[in-house]
Length: 282
Image (cartoon, rainbow, N blue to C red; front, top):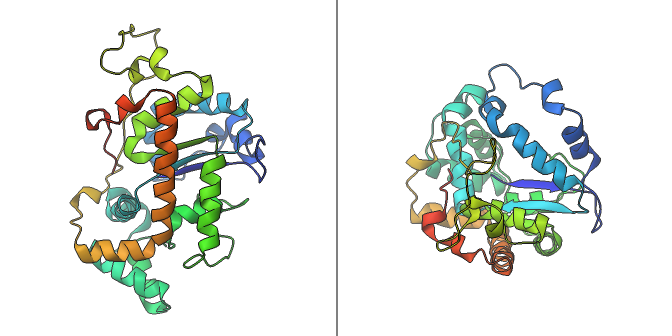
């Protein structure tokens, strides 16, 4: 999944008022999830720790936090959540194959309304270049898929704008390196390598710190919410269709990887990029 906590245009602004309102006024306690939805409840244990971190970020003049993902993995994850236990329970999607969904999506984006409607019966609406659109969206609710009405299938200007956002954002992380991304964010906030103050960010050979006070942050974990992503068998034809649907995201993600590696190197966290330190996401 992707996270983009964005402020209004203009580098150096504070977090958007909508987000600050959520962080400062017990939004989740006043607005419980709808009946039958346990997504929020399943994250309950880590919710307050997460909010504390975001409140701390509110003291910084930041433009946004970005968490990008490999376009192929992102597309599989979207379909996996639709076809998983949670998606079926909340949205009543029909059973279908990943290959068939991609074929319908591609036809739908080419103007076939019947195919687009059929694709939506297998999984929720999926814009082409979804990450590029999220990164460049302005003053929109990026959580519900509402776009600004601009066609983006062949909009190279939007891809360029997304790259500019990556260059100016306070933090850019990668889902594939989620744990390392958390350590990088902590390093940026303190302007010091997290290896020196967080035992979860230590590398082999670092002096081991004690467990710290009660309630210290635990290592990151991932909840799948019953996703069926791990059952998807990707074919070469599937890869070609994903590349067609996410051509812009491919360039944006490549730029994000460069920014991420540069920042990780700056804080001497490259040892965390080893596969043994990675957390698999679905």
